[in-house]
Image (cartoon, rainbow, N blue to C red):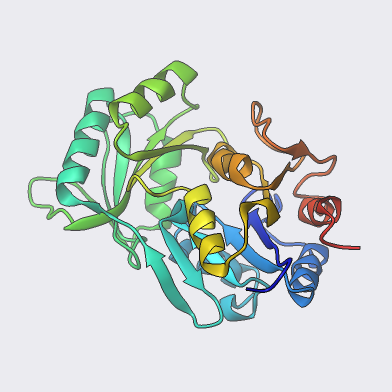
Length: 284
């Protein structure tokens, strides 16, 4: 155990990644400085491993050279150790679980996707109920090489990382609560679409999946107490992580109603991660 070591966890989209889909050099320098001071740096993202690596490639960055020690991907369903380039934890749901979850989404007439188990999460099958759902269609286009419509001949995966429903124009709080109640034996995560920034994504995982549970598992393995965990986020799927962490910060562009932690006066476009690191006391 390294005495007084901290864990710094930042969300990716809307927090570290700015609106131009880039990362400021200042924030990258901050992450590197944290590492130099002995702080363990982790990114916690709803993206799959494939999607995260694709995002870094688009800004001409290499995952092994990125200033982080761990990647908590697919909302914590998987954890990648950067130094060894090895997945050190992954959780999935079984085919009977998928059947129960999709039956629920069919009752609500949600358009949804079933993502294959880690590490092949970018493969998915999908079902549409015929809604006007541009966000759903855009996601299929983005992954058209890996996506297949569900029909009578589609073979379901033996295990899956998640089932994702895309609800156009958001989801009322009452309906979100009803879905959580119907699927209470799973982890149900409500997030804002990173594609159109309006649609609601309802993601259903293994019951032990969340950003906070992944961070807690990692911190325990590193013998870092919860009181020395600092987290930064901006969206609904960060709330459990922000509530769990010893110190938590929301960037100024955080979604309405996300009131956990200290709201810092700058956004993801103005080095919000750097400001959070400074306010936490981890940087001089």
